[in-house]
Amino acid sequence: APDNGVLSYVLQKERSVVIREITNKKYFLQKLSNTFHGRDVFAPVAVHLCRDTACRVPTVYKQLGTVCKTPLLLPLCVPSKTKNTIKGTMIHIDHFGNIITNITAKEVRGWRSVITTIKNKEIHGLSSSYASVAKGKLLVIEGSTGFFEIARREGSAAHFLKVQKGTKIMMRRTDNV
Image (cartoon, rainbow, N blue to C red):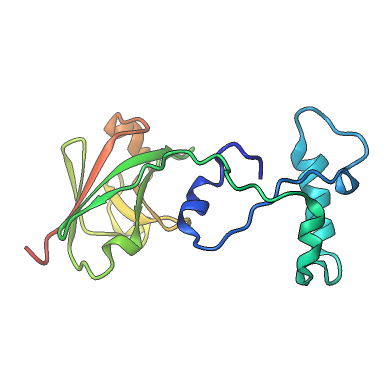
């Protein structure tokens, strides 16, 4: 990946990672564009690493370039958690108007009853499908990436709630208070 912070989340979660700056032009396409390193550098290097036994030979990695000891890390928007609440943030709105939060299902494991609050609206419980609520109703569901999403059945939750990236969200445990 480019050293532009895109791996910040992964690098701050993983314990043992070695990052190499790809400098050995032997593995690049012959003609490099100024803007398409995914095709010109990363794809050819990935092909090389996946050939035969290359991935099982540690010396192959060393041939790619030098170790990068200080990759660019962007500050992460991490939720804060107490025994009965998690305060998070809206980090993305998808093209359906679903609100993706920075709160994962792992963080509420063991909570049997939850109320999610966003913009003074309360959503009771967690849903396992969009069909579990009536048309037009808001729901909280674990998305395919493991983060909770706030959605509106057959509608845009973001438009309905008039929210934007950075909006605060709170999940409150109600089975243990």
